[in-house]
Length: 405
Ligand SMILES: Cc1ncc(COP(=O)(O)O)c(C=O)c1O
Image 1 (cartoon, protein in one colour):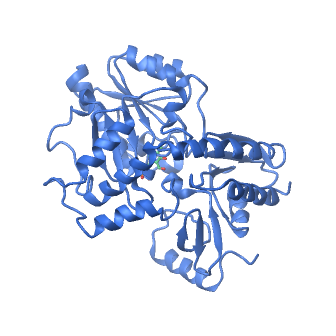
Image 2 (image 1 turned 120 degrees about the horizontal axis):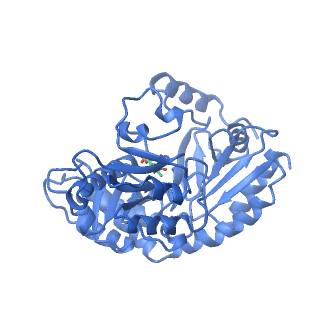
């Protein structure tokens, strides 16, 4: 196959490089259109999308049912601000709270905004309900976390690239090793408002906690009157073969943070979902967003929730994930040092002897497969949940080929 980028692609990449801030290091492919699991570049080459925009495209590119909801809403009403009511926000919030088994939804836009909102809710709950002394509330977070890019959030990241040179950092966060329930129990004191965790750490390389960890976190939080906030922005909404990654252990957190796939791959839509006794602490005027809860996003989100309510995507992710796992496990010892997988979400550690994660991603690109590396030696695999088993098999064949096994 020819190189991924030739004249037109190279020109567009150069133009982007000249005028877009260099806050990313994209792979050299210029997408022009996409359908389902396949992306087409400006030269007409096709690529199988095994990244799904970091799980924002759980239903694939241009899912007809989601597109139809968006198109219908585009012609009717797109934005009101929350100064007025709109006829889509109520139905969306009602469906989403039902999916989550909670009372209330606070709609925002990006994932980071949902996390920020969760932090504000936890602090307000800590002062107003738990009775923590003013400005003393703390939140326990995990080493290796990734919760977004705002100044408060990067302040409690331990990834130097995300964190360094963006201080001064907001106080009030206490770190514990990921997956260590005893460390959480030991870190809790009278000022602890919440434990904020990814039930599976995505950006860290699809890192799964030890079995029973989430259950223990739930027990510890309940016993100590501390909120359990699950950041399901990347892990939730069908990706792991359940609606939420917490479902893998039958655990219900106090607060769900959702984003990415909630917007159906069309627009940013995030949400904080919790019961009245928690989310009810926020009063009019204390929090909001011009675009949060807009009718276009709500119409798309409603359709996404309706699609998830049938359980079809979760079942598919579970079955295909088991199939993918079998295939990927055969690569361990053949250019791969470890595989971590939950549903259709895998972290594959590349043996340094065959290359870096980035090099493998570039070689896969040349063979028509889109993946993204993370933390040096890991590639992440997170295809749309609509992918077929034969397409997954083909992708693993390409991986085998570039690993030389
Ligand atoms: C677990 C988690 N939380 C929060 C975020 C931030 O989401 P966004 O990029 O939409 O702000 C991400 C993004 O990758 C994430 O994986």
